[in-house]
Length: 275
Length: 314
Image 1 (cartoon, rainbow over the protein chains, first blue to last red):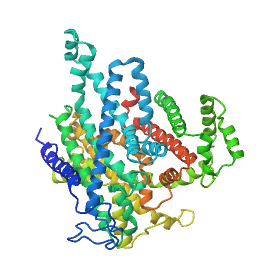
Image 2 (image 1 turned 135 degrees about the vertical axis):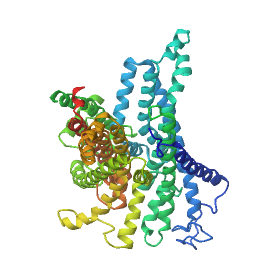
Image 3 (image 1 turned 90 degrees about the horizontal axis):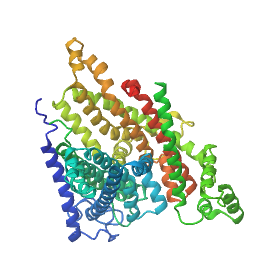
Image 4 (image 1 turned 90 degrees about the vertical axis):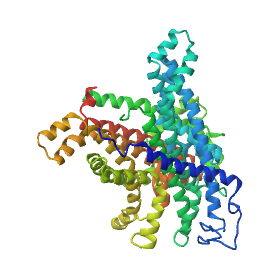
């Protein structure tokens, strides 16, 4: 077959890596420096258009949009990393237990799992936030629960198929304990699909968190997130369009970077793709 | 075929039971007396006692659950704390609008995805393919609510072609109602066509490689016939599954679109009820949406054999 210029991983990986790397740099930079205090109100300069003093303009309270977008990046990224870590660790554990023990444990875990999957993720997150209240902790918990089942499903599937492979058989024959075989041989080989899924998960969480904040049930103000900045920008859309542009571009560039990186990873790690 | 349908119908029963259990227990996770939670601050002692009796709070949990399911099956989902309207009436009014927007947008997105995906797969690795894949990836990265805001800014505020804020019910003026729905539907169509196009392209690429496609071409069939009669039906099944999933996800995700365009739909009802701690409505919306999600996936699965007869044979 002729080489495909689209499935060639390189441009995807480079652009995706640059975008995600840039995001991380902005987040880290935000810890040591932002042009202004992101929360400080300056009523003398509300709704200032982009200029040399305020690169991306200022909002209705005179707060610097660039500074707020930088802090927003930090909040979004920490929430997304928290959710991905929680969902991947818990999901791998639960999925591995289901796939490893099989029998009734597997049946119970998978039926609960399928029940959670029967709710659209966003709806489930909304429901949990209705119960838990809206703050950073409950957003992380709600989104972790919403996205956990997909990880459980993937890990269980991978474990079920890997445990039948010959090298696992060999490990048993040599006399390795079941737990050792599991940790040493089965889990590491089940990781590639989890890595691919975790990458997409990061993007979904950034999107879901900004949607929740946009709706007013996410991170509460005055802490800025891209979602609540967009929501606050709505009344000023006609006269201060820069307020709606910056957070939107931030979300879009993040998602684009994560998606491209995810595609590149999938091409590398998924053996079912064309060789 | 009949046994496939029956089997698929039976499979939804445990899912529905789990959904009902989850919604029932979720509201009971809120600390405090469920009757107090459901009545809010508005209730006096008498109505509190009446609701306790009605919910069966003096009975064991399983009995409470059965009572609750019984009520729900009769369409009785309680009353809103804020407006004291029956929850089922509220949901039904709001759902009609949401359903119109979602169905029109997803149908349009599916048509676009099938045409663009087939074309890209057919001319794989040409500039056409690159353009389709690039556009789809770009669309995937743009959040629907931001796209909505931008379209609103351009077509509503700058050009003034379409109304910006508010909504007129179809019963009052069908033309005006339709005008209010153009931008939300356009936004959703663009957003959802990205992922569908990618799916259609990748399954069409897989099918184009198969021998019967070569055979069909060797018979001298036109490229259009090959694509429409042989490639499309065999490549469409995964896209159809995705359509089902998207319809379900939109039931939760439509709230942001309804917020951007100030449409009184089901998603906005749910978010407003969460913000107003109107728990009977939250519970009703959750149950209703989850049941619709299960039903949509059931319908999609039942449509499967139309495109892929092998499904029933398994």
